[in-house]
Image 1 (tube, helix red, strand yellow):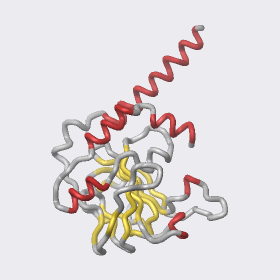
Image 2 (cartoon, rainbow, N blue to C red):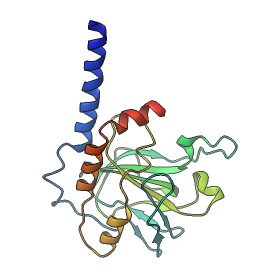
Image 3 (cartoon, rainbow, N blue to C red):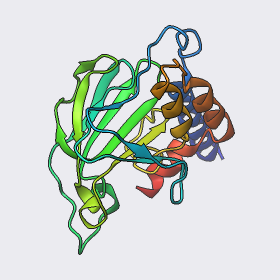
Length: 204
């Protein structure tokens, strides 16, 4: 009985900790941060829907990919590990950049053709971080960049990383020069599904 109680307490602690990591310290600074449209040099188009989960595929081959806001590069995959015959989910993005924004929103760019930053780099809004390409399973589709926006999960996972907030609303605003923050949208998702990180990590 005591052991069961201990397991429940520990599990509850990790769920609460995950929600705290995902939503803490972002309500006060959301109006102070700058946001920019994260593509330049080449005209781009982007979808307002996505298969299976919220995300946006942006088309405009060889466009520069820019940091949408200030933050720290949390992870980079600079080598395309995707193999068509295996099609491992964790490699489908090919060359990728994961940015942890100062707004505590996670920005995930995949199918890049070139990566210009490294892990732990500090970036500012509009900084050139990569180039759109055809890496990962985009080798058999067409040149584009997948943009996923989500909470920051403390665990290693890819299902939440792929996207849980619809980016196109923010892309529309940023393209017009409107400084629209995704923080409130992220917080609503965290409140609605506080265990998403744990569930995704268990399926990884």
